[in-house]
Image 1 (cartoon, one colour):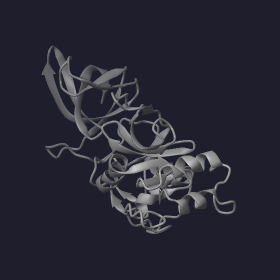
Image 2 (tube, one colour; image 1 turned 90 degrees about the vertical axis):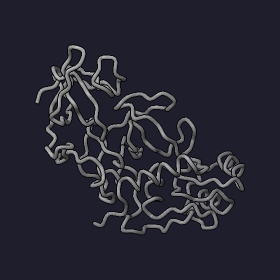
Image 3 (cartoon, helix red, strand yellow; image 1 turned 30 degrees about the vertical axis):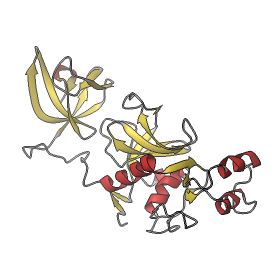
Image 4 (cartoon, one colour; image 1 turned 180 degrees about the vertical axis):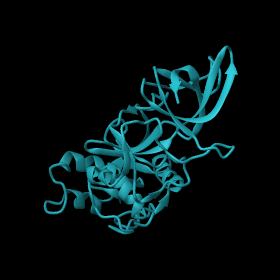
Length: 268
């Protein structure tokens, strides 16, 4: 199966949609411009979703006509990008080519079933991985954040915090069940989960916490806490340590960034 995107490009694309497009959550949409044609299409008795697109729902969408809005649902955001969404409001699908690039039409659960390396351990997640919970899917974009199309909170494509990693000021937070790597995304431009190396070319070693431990941005007891890992969490050790303030700090890779934790609480 050929890759469609490098992970960094895929992340850039979904972030751009979240930050620079007017969007609204629409079940069954993968980038539809909000216009009369598409509203009727979504509410169609035969091929649409009439039980979802009630008269009241249609009226709310009609209020957005002429304001350059595009509709997505959760997996529709992923499919739309994989199918080539361009934000072309003159085309019924916003510039996407349905079922193109070898990607079939599927729901969020089936999309996640294709992912490799599925895990409920979020300590080594890399940008571009898919986030999943029953009936919902999103994209991890790094720094503890996700892009998801959801009717929750702002009813649009939005950036949210991954609660499994930690809360973030200014962001709504969602706890996901698992994450995994999509077969349509090339993750070689990110941090490998098993074969990455540090600046000296030495392979990173996996360790495991023997107690709950704070992960900090700097090797300092007053360093900003990035997250708190539970006992038994896997961590990626670079092999370096820093002595400071009476502590020995282990240098680790967390979400693709160099961070530190108290070495005594990590085995390996």
